[in-house]
Length: 246
Image 1 (tube, rainbow, N blue to C red):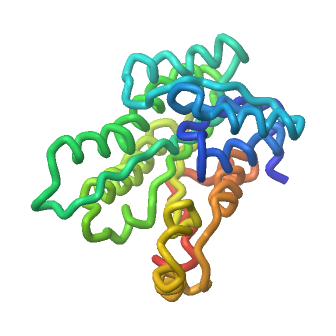
Image 2: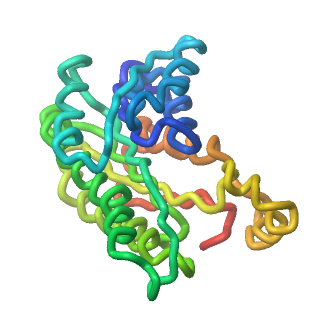
């Protein structure tokens, strides 16, 4: 199931965490993965995939660089003849209460989390339309669905991804392109592991399934949405949150 043999997939924010796990899972299922991040930050991801017999290449990409993003899908098509899957995962946080938030912190989060997805999807439209098929997957957040104090910029960017995906899904469905969103909940990261046992336990109490999620939980969802088995799913928000938000 979920075989991706011969598919070409671009994953942004592939240097660590959820992005790295998604890149690894897609490669395990047979995809040729283009692991994108700034500089050579995704090198370890590419090396790990290669060590397991998968196919991956590094792409130095700043998702806030409009010119670079515009060129990325075309470069992939030039090298591989096609581009089948885009996972827009790169994201940042700059948390602060709204009354203290600087405009630069708002702009930076919107540019990285939302505008970059627009630019990447737009750049991929021509080859995907020509192929009459493709998968666009945006990584949002439970915060975009339920909000969180001190994260108005982050919540707005992640909620924006949901509206963007639903609208784009309607535009391109007739050409065999699906557009979906994954909304992770609380995921085990270096940050959550560093908050202490009591705070960690408090987070777990907020989750019906009684645990934080893992990057692999999110990667499994991405692999499904990228596969042929999900060909009749579009404009959907797949929550990977342990029941934290229903």
